[in-house]
Length: 458
Image (cartoon, rainbow, N blue to C red; front, side):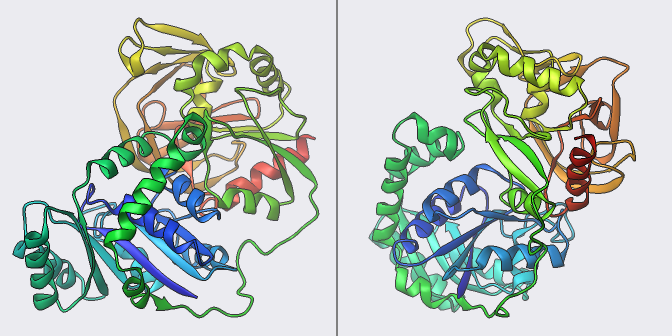
């Protein structure tokens, strides 16, 4: 199989729309496996939609090198092409002086050729200086080609392409003009995950628009020639290879309100002997299961529907009281509080609005609050539903969860904000709710412990 990594010179370069279109185009004649660098849910939802395979995340802050290799090998099974989308600029990472958490770290770990997307708005010869700087900043990175974005016209294109190919000795395989249609489509696509957006109208049409635009301005065959041939053992061993009997059922909330899950979670749970049962807190009744997982998402956009499904809320509350294990991240945590308050002006709210939630935790969620985007590092105590562990993860939220002062927290953070005073992982009975998003492979031991608790309690 062949592989390639697409990255940008900065956030906003157009990398995401270009990678999405390339994945769609290549999938017409090949089995394409997509990957996303970093802890992110929304871009992978679109890459999965166009490739018809689960997109998998690769993050060198949370994952060690062996875990990165395992996820890559497992994801690539049965694929013809692996296409990796970077995060932000090529060298952006967790700190200033190392490449941990960056796209560059993944490119080096997997030894992948890189195509650099450069926003060439208002520059021509200077675009060559940008590419040259990226080449020389880290010689271990092999920039195999360039795609220019935001090209104004023929003269602009000619000057920029000529300069890059002359000074940098790499081919420019695409030069994409500034197009309002593409900007409008991506602005809408970027607002919501694919699972939510596809139920609201013309999202597939927007993806088709982007794909059609990119197909006209990127030389797909030239791009293919830059890909690296990847050789794997016939059946490479991975952490996903165990296939025990399924001894326990775990309900997973998946709908328009809750859909922030890493694809590896479902594979790993099965290796721990757990069958996964999807359900919708918006539409369904709570299914019978030995434990439940409530992932992140945008429950604040569906407060009315969540409040209206009072049977679900009552069942979740009763299930928690009975000691059935429940694990909730971010949006799931918000759903487990007593109520959610949306302030005037938030998402078009005309006046402050309260909606009843599950009431598993004594407290409330308020939106909006300060924006928190951070890697997280901490420890989980032995009495936690996920056991004693050191972990790394990610938090991204605009909400504030205010819980009673006597709330017990099982996570102590050395990096990140958490729920309160660098504490996270609120616990009541066998229910845990946190702002921390865990990568299931990096935190496999914690999820294994949770499955074991489900078996024990049952």
